[in-house]
Image 1: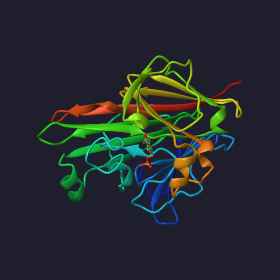
Image 2: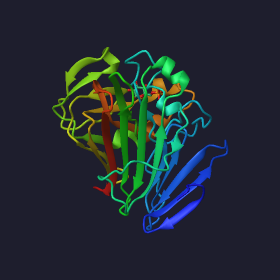
Image 3: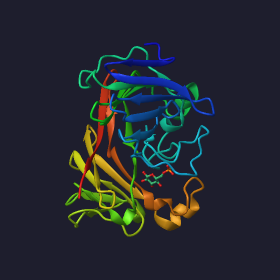
Length: 303
Ligand SMILES: O=P(O)(O)OC[C@H]1O[C@@H](O)[C@H](O)[C@@H](O)[C@@H]1O
């Protein structure tokens, strides 16, 4: 496929369009009508919809869609730095860069070809290399399966002559009914670093995480399956991850939301970020080595 238009076959439909700023976006659809939209700006998934057209990812009504800033919502990719843990800009530069469609990606045996998918590629620019002097190839596959599952597979290869280390997150903004109706399961008994307490280490005591104020935590060595239960909407997001030891949970709550230009004052109630991530122990790649980090999202009815 030349990725300049629309393709429909047994893999579903892959359509390349442009947004109003002229940025290329790729729309994936399966035969049941579920869809996902990926922007080449940041390699960011901006939308993931069920077959009934229900949006599953949060995007702020105040989101700014002009590069280089990442859009507030969807799934920005944090690489090669998470947060401010390093000398680069917050969450690294990958989310602010223009990616290209990878016409000829190396085979990916773990992803079924029956999915509608797109392969994107990011390589560092001369300016990126001045800030972070490591040559890499970052290949991202985004797939939408027949059952509506959304999968993201990141492959990062060291094409340098020296080793390098990075941190990473799929910074996933889930759309929820109300933050007070939501609980996150799968983090119980795990240690976390609390970004609101100078990264002090605590142990999760509750049998689930609920929200009553700002939360900004990195759960360490967490289980590979996490559930985000939304009681009001009667649905549960299931997050499955591979190659990503940590889970970041973030909700800015009222005060912080008011200080953010691209988030409405009350919108913190409709979002929660639960990110599959590698933060505490950065990934190190020797020359020629490649790392893979996989995220699979699904949604199931719940009571
Ligand atoms: O405003 P940004 O750069 O997208 O970051 C949003 C938040 O992202 C979270 O992942 C971090 O843990 C928070 O500390 C941060 O505030």
